Length: 389
Picture 1 (cartoon, one colour):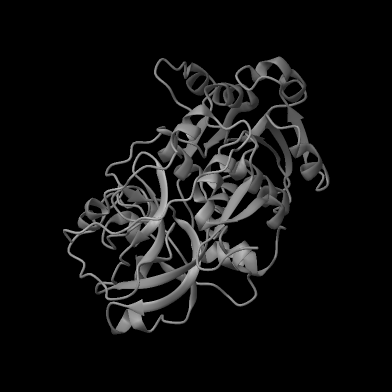
Picture 2: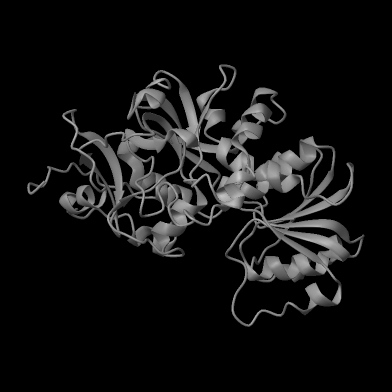
């Protein structure tokens, strides 16, 4: 491993109005691939041809690396499609720490198992799969209770989170226990949503009372919209408070109320119409903004339930007295069951494809991140194993 591999870089085309932090993070730079390969641990180097990857080392670079080799209990997956998630953007833009650089990001993917590290793993070869990002120990109370996303042992060892190479590569090694087979009736474009859909389904189950209930969703990003569709399909009357007026038509076609704001940092400027009608028994905070959290505390009725789907809202010096004064229950949602998500997709409960903004190729990965970082961007899907035309 003393010889660096040759890299191929593709200059990122100009993208209108990208956030400055994102623009600074996607300029091509030289990458020490020996460092990355060494960080992968004691895997034996495969004799196969190098694989294409999108690597983050402070910048985003498209290049080649030796493929990983599945160890015992692991399966090697040929990635077909990978979505750019909020967590990926947070890592690139510095809102979350990257534990080790360089690294391969990505965790929302669908692909086909092509190799296994042992006989049990080899039985998965040929199957189309999605996977949990969370590596489960299998022995802690959360794992035994079927909530592997709460596993305290491997909390910091998620796929594509810095320590474990992710799915923005042609091949990724995944524990067999993390895999779930995709039914034939689900397209790749739908299956790639299984991971965030699992979270949305788990969150929707926290509504106080049987449907129909009046529910408020604060934040109209990808997770906010996905959750809104799931809540609506469950029979609830959903209102959405968001920053992007373009969402109005998408939501109104389903009979969902949308209230927009001009200034995302001051939602109180137009929140009176939402709050004066009636308070909500269940309010979901998906904006990740302090102003959104403040609005959520004002909107939920006494002894109601405030559900957080973002870990970016709370800041030092926050006034949480309304939580105490009104005896509000506060819940956090970190994940959900992939089995439930795949069953949901099979039944076609919602039309998920309008949430896709663009389909791009891995070779355009840096540009795809810039597009995903734009204000109001919906989901960006990257074709990994084949070129999208």
